[in-house]
Length: 109
Image 1: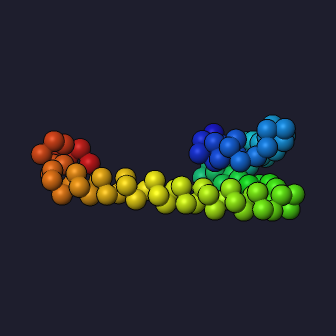
Image 2: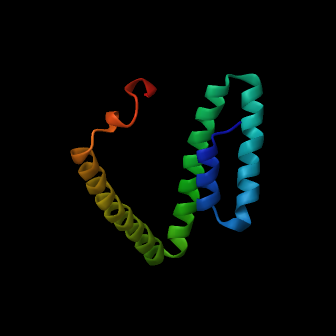
């Protein structure tokens, strides 16, 4: 079974009209590799191909519409940063006021 996260990334980042063909080829090759080598080797190969495929499609999109693509990427980075800051502050405030080990047994971890 290929990595689910890699499949999700491919689903989100590859254009819908090309998704089935691209992912189908990757899954077929993964299946062949998993049969003849170790599963971890095949999964590593799948991740490598996932990043190459995403890069190929993003580069193609950037060539077609450079300004829109750059604006989307910059907007996403800002959104990620500004969404992470309040979450980190909230976690720090909670941990400063409450000891998590009062509520969860340490042996659970």
